[in-house]
Amino acid sequence: MLLAPALMAMGACKGNETRESGSAGNTSSGVSFRTPPRVVGSWCGGTDKAPHWTYVFGGDGQYVRRNASGQGDSGMARFDSAQMTLIVDGRPVISYPWSMYSDPTLGDLLYIDGFSYVRGKCS
Image (cartoon, rainbow, N blue to C red; front, side):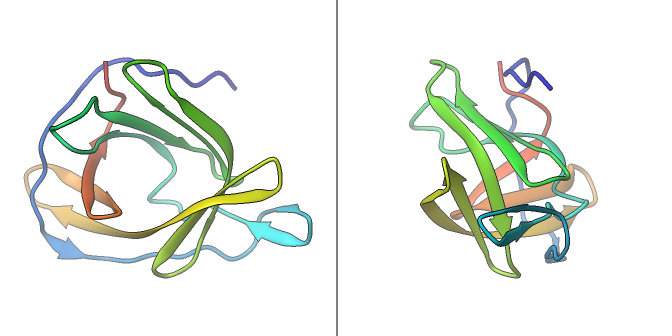
């Protein structure tokens, strides 16, 4: 599956929180990976002080993240109810707090480390 940045960058607003967590799924080194169903897909967002990032999450726990400059990484994402841990080559790279909100206008919003992401890819 080829995943690359494409289009769309928007700001986002807070709405009703609906956190999700995964359980079964892909395993690597004894760790189970499964992306929460509402998180699966492409997300664009981040800070306005730097190029936006596109995160793409597969249902099996795989992820790709890239900014407009082409910087980024890929690997596995492990989700629990409040933390998302990105794992590259079997090593945890970083953990972020995460949550999801539903906004009546914008739809699902994914918050990673306090930054909002909307569905779609950044250009």
